[in-house]
Length: 227
Image 1: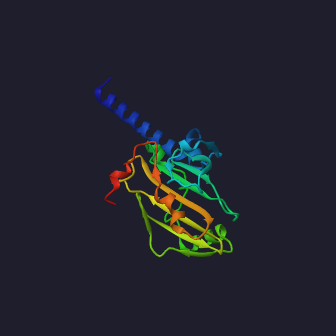
Image 2 (image 1 turned 135 degrees about the vertical axis):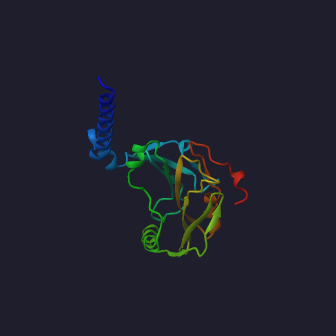
Image 3 (image 1 turned 60 degrees about the horizontal axis):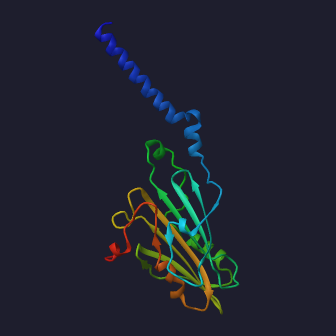
């Protein structure tokens, strides 16, 4: 076969391969792309506290009662932790953690499921709706200034009545320079607790003492001393 014919055959083969790859990406061949684009969360499953990606500061009132998790695609893992509740108020004391990882392939980057948490985490409108639902018949106040733990600033709201106090704190952690490994895109943490009395600092203490324990190593607390 002449050399020019061999070159032409090779070029046609490369062109067909490129077209086939493009078709796979756009048509959802064998359901691969389509299934990932419409992926829904898996059912919740119970886990042991040791399997959580976070530990809280010690608290007698807010010990871990139960923990569960679910996945959304291969990108998001959501953990829900029920905490002790020394009050008779409606609602559940809890900690919620969403871990967003980076896809490990080009296909994964193209077909990520929708983000499981909004950015910003709250607007004044959505925060008002949430606090009314969480703390009915209580006086709610959004803190004027952010508070700080070892992973940076976080925002919070308080709620009080004649006997009880509550806090709702939320934080988006996406500092790769000092905190997160490259494979973890972001961590969202939300903390809701109520207790008898009016000591807001005591309610926030477990969140202030929170430590991330993600499967991939993150910087130790002492490495963040300059924050």
